[in-house]
Length: 445
Image (cartoon, rainbow, N blue to C red):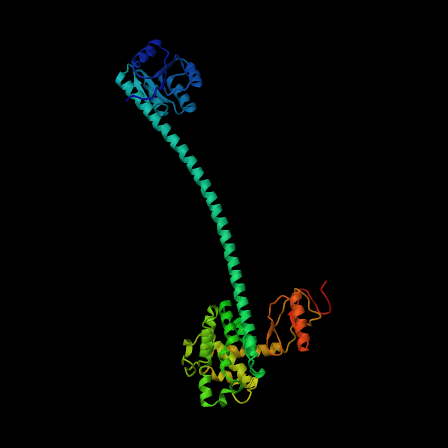
């Protein structure tokens, strides 16, 4: 197996005749041949020239062959090593082989064909080792480049993920703000609807307060709460198609035709909201808020859990307020009687589980209403200041919503309140959240 690229061989032997014989044997091969007569000169040659194969005699004065090849292995491990050994050099040969310092050993006198084969195999092995080292170096460099690329990619992915998270948070915040604004707009719209109703029939704001508080008690989701609040704000939308005389009548004393029309108002309210996509859940709640737990309600005679949860809650709030205001029977039902009688209708009119929770909530609210609320402070338009946060909804005498709970006061809003007071010749009391650290009698130090 001939090598296409000329290799450099270093022949080390203390006998010149051996060196000449080896050179003669290799004369027809494209090798560059160097020679040395002892180990020391061989090492000096290796320090100054690039050598591919060292062919060394085993026994030499000074540094012997195995020791020389061991040094070559230590300092130039890529150089291939062949040991020439005489018949009486078995101990040296065994030493070289056992210590792993040689690629081949050749006995003297040598067979030229075996010599050529050993050199060719040594060079082929060297070529493979160099390719392996080159590939290892290339692989290492590629792995390092890949790791660096992965690190950059991971950093970019993390950066992009963080950007997407922030974008999602901004989108959610914008959506929540839009939903909140829509709920507020619905309450304002409800206030406008109340202009069509007599003062004794303006129930929406009270119903809204009850369902919102009940949602807090039950820890319902914000979306469910928003849908239910919208339904509470517009549950009597269908009544606006009635004439004034019918609006003022309790269902108990309505005539047959009026009663039939009364049973249609939940359907009318649902149809009027059909075009408003964000109000679809609220429309469904409105449709079924006059269903009864026992299935004897209207318009679809739904029973039990088939009635939407929001509709079951809205019915309790509507019945409680409308009965108390005299809108169901020809007389007003005192609140104390309502609290006693509502549980009796659990399982007939109302969801039995929700009914008891609802009554307990009303009792708690009544108790809290008689206690002074230290978390809010009452202000007039003369004392209220920008950046104060409204703690309770503020309505006009006609029920129109002026300020919603949670609104942050601004100079423009304060001026609007002044204008309303002048136009209506009255004075508003605005309840705002007490600042942290504020104490009765002055500001905290």
